Image (cartoon, rainbow, N blue to C red; front, side, top):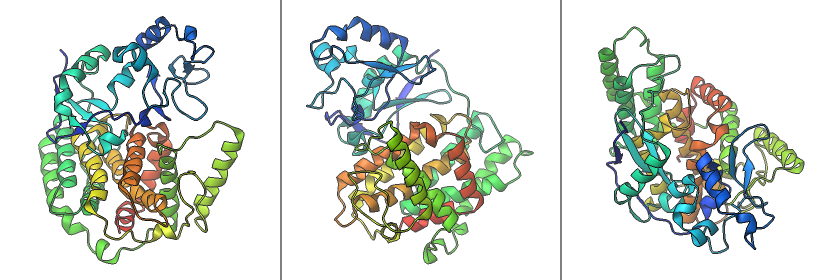
Length: 415
């Protein structure tokens, strides 16, 4: 029996405003039904599409296909006015399912599926549009078509090497969410509390505890994390050089996901990326020109405090973390085999990375809301980006956690 589909209790808003961002640099996988639909549309006979490949293999040896891109990274069906040619000429239902669904996201859980939004869309990042609850019937129709609510998923491990059933996983995810939305503290402090909770849980000998006692432990840790912060915020010590190198390597992956950045597949680009990697390890002088839209800046500039920003500039970051936490998408979607503790660390590090990128994007000028929305778009894209969900990223986070540097990174770049 299909899972019931419900929106988040927190009101999220979205409507398409035809910015075309989702049609630039995004990978659109195609199902067999999508491929059959595109073939029946006979784009090879269209006067403006003749000779233009509309699909391509996802990999050389793979059997999966995706929509083709132009050299600039945009979808072959994107028109200059920001509209989709398929939609404009054949109607909404003629598009691939991923295009029809985005940025709505279905997250199957235990006994229910949650409808939320991907903030990889600038309008979603800005909560601009109708409440998502008003789009529930539309989402149910698309979910049935793809079987997105046909069955619940297995619970993620609570920490590396330890799996429990949904009752324990639910308690853990709900506890972390409470910490991340606790309005008694600013967002940066909430993230530190969640990271400390995960550190204490990871170090605790929990394998011998039954589910009830483990739930009691969650309550004890939740009530004690505020006392574990110590002088982290009063002293604001810079992270170690080794931690800073790892942090910048992770941040570089997010720069590649910026909505106005496109990596050309060429040997020149590969050499440029190798040079960039060396510059990031060295960490001195001018930053590499990873992004043509970013101003010239130095590594030293990105270590300076941002100062107190207007609340409207923090809000998209906060909403991204809070709704991702409430939907549990960070722990369930796209990171197969990761534990809740590992996934929380990945979510938490997006905040200092976002503020680091904000320093870079606005170097030498005043910050604008558009800068924030672009960066939140990149952070959300990271939720489904393979290099940020694989073995290397998992190892980076383990090293940072083992060095006790994650909380220091959050506090340092949150200045």
